[in-house]
Length: 192
Image (cartoon, rainbow, N blue to C red):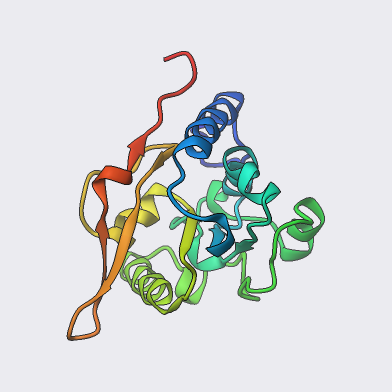
């Protein structure tokens, strides 16, 4: 992605695609889960949909479903963080499931507003949603700005970095994500 925030829903740059391919090479070797119990959940922005294609295509080839959810979208209302309409996404990405995409998407209203309080509320919603899922593993492809609010602790996420978490619910019902550090890695760009 370029750093021009006025570009509507930008696609990955060539460098970004190379980084995704490096991630794919690493993940396919190190993936610690059986694929028959997995699901990929992705932000419906072009760059995250492409990240799934280039980083996780090997999972898709093994039948792992991909579900786009508005809850995982980026947190600003800048053009670069506003996505295409569902009908356009379904045409461009026919193998991905858009049936759970909130009908208000791509509008930045309600739960998807860019205000900090709203973003934190959305982060709590996705933590609770994760805790309610029965999948053996859920691979989430989203944005570092939003992930900072979901995870709440730890260093800022970088591009093509992945971390593995266990989901815990405390006695009060609060959901937190506990990082499994031995399964989290930073993938360098090709040639670095």
